[in-house]
Each structure stands twice: as C-alpha cells, then as structure tokens.
Length: 249
Image 1 (cartoon, rainbow, N blue to C red):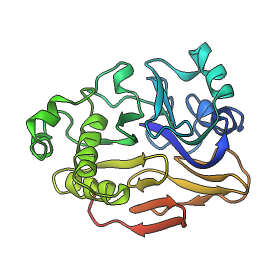
Image 2 (cartoon, one colour):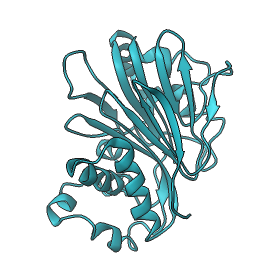
Image 3 (cartoon, one colour):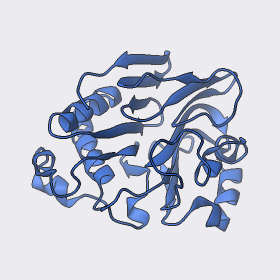
Image 4 (cartoon, one colour):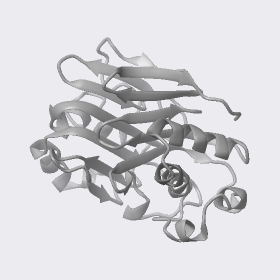
C-alpha cells in the first residue's frame, strides 16, 4: 500500500502540504491514521512538481524512507509550485524494489501514482498486459503492478483520452480481468484526476490557495470531504467534481 497527495492552485512550498501539517505525508510514512492495509510506508517515496513556464514536471525519488533522506526537507522548503504529486510507498508483495518503483511515474507532462494492489500480480495478469502493444510493455519502468497500471493509463492518454477518462477506463480494464484496490492519482499540472476504489480518499479546498486530494487528511481542520468508494474525482478550473465509477471489486 501507499499514501499519496496531489495539489493544484497558487504557488506553494511542498513542505507546507507534506511536512508541516501534523499528520502530513511525511508523518504518514511511519504513522498513517487511515491506512487499512499495511502500517509503514518506508519502501521509497517521490515528489513531482511543475515549475512556472515548463509543462514537463521535475521529479525527486528515492528507494528508502522519506524520513531518512536529508535532502528532502531542503528541497521541499525552497521549491514553489502550482501543482505537485507526492507519494510514500509500502511495496506490494512480489513487486520490485528500487527508486524506479517509487511514484510518481512520469511521461511527458503527466505524473501518476497508485495506492493499492492488483490481485494476481505478477503471474495472473497476462490478460491485462495483452491490452498493451509489446513496445509499451518493454517501456515499463519497474516490475510492479503500479507500473503496469501506469502503462495502461498512459496508453489511453496517448490515444487522446482526458485524465478522468483514462483513469476510469483503466479501472474498467482491470476489474474486467481481476480484482484490486485501485486508488489512482494523475495530473498534467493543470487538471487533477483521482479514483477511490478500495481505499480512502479525501479532497479539501484551501481558501486563497487551491485544492488538495489525498489518501487521508493531513490535519483535523474542517473542510475535508471523504470521497465515496467507487468514485472518480476531477479537479480543474471549474472546481471539484465527483462521479460514480462503474465496475466490480
């Protein structure tokens, strides 16, 4: 399992969303409050963010726990960004270790994260892999269920799907062949999409700043809204929209 968070809005230092809150993603790496599967997220972490005037995001990923990385606090302090995606990882059994397995995954102007697990990994997912051209399978960044999900999402994005459509279609693909917990998080720096499918998800508007979507609230302030399980969330200039996904567990 994992915990993840994304933000869209006015420029902010990542530390204000990830480190300073009393139950921020940094603390969730060892003391999550709402995580239903696993207790510690120490198998890697990552931060992806967008600089003004550059639609291609930067990433900082490591294969160890976020609290053991001395450089992260400085990085999170000095950056200012209008959009970010961050995650701390608890590896699924049978999935590869290493920095390349840590979210966010990236291609072009997209960032992606997966909180959950796909049943049957790796031996029983041939039908899912068969949905992709061989060349795209060879591009998998890591031997993990999350990397396969990212390849399925990316295939739809490259075919012209919008962010929400790409996530909804991928959930439908997976649930047609197997079961799993599929909390997916995707952004292009202007729009944010997420699914709640088998695990917790919340969103919150930050007055004067923007919108956060996160696995769990990072504080006890009012304004956090739990996303119903089986839902798609889209955040854009119109605000936050939530709709039901179709599929099965």
